[in-house]
Length: 261
Image 1 (spheres, helix red, strand yellow):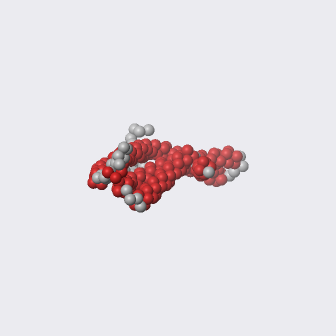
Image 2 (image 1 turned 90 degrees about the horizontal axis):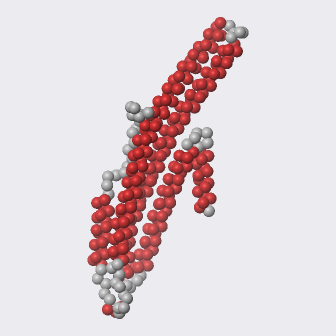
Image 3 (image 1 turned 180 degrees about the vertical axis):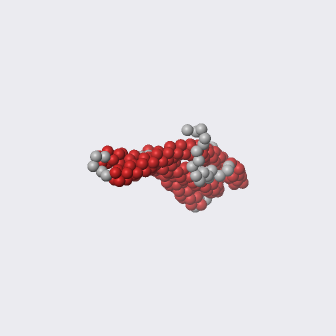
């Protein structure tokens, strides 16, 4: 069912591109949107599972289980926040791609305008040639003026296409570079925080007493202070690693770089 839904979404994205090009970019934007939705769903499932685990542990009489699961639940809150921030980075990444798509659309619009101007000029040339033998001097002058204006419009449209392409290619590289670097930084940040939090979870799990070959009556749990310390240290490391914000800040206007094209 999921495969069918995904195929339908991709087909819809391609259909939206018909006549306008950029179908691959439209599909890519759709996929990034799905990535974000799935990452949020995964985050919510983990959080719900953690809450269920905590409720189960709360009913246990074993102090070791109660403490360990409670501290893991605290770590999960931090992990949920890390994933929530990553989800925002995915949103910004998609917005960057949408801005690239908008630039591509502007180029296509300029090209379409050039094609329309060229078609109008060609039509007037044929009309002028056809009317050469039977039209009056005044009619010929009117047609020649129209053709002159059409040729001028075509030249201006050609200049606009060249300018749009130059500006778009420069801005596209700027946006892609910044967007790709920032999403890479976001993955690195999430990976490092994941390692920090789950290394702490592992250390906390190791605080559960080893019962092999021992009498349960003689085992005492003394790890509550240690598990709290692991949580505190992990949170502190996550806080320290939090670099500058990965918010996108794109130029308001498209500015070409001299010599770039």
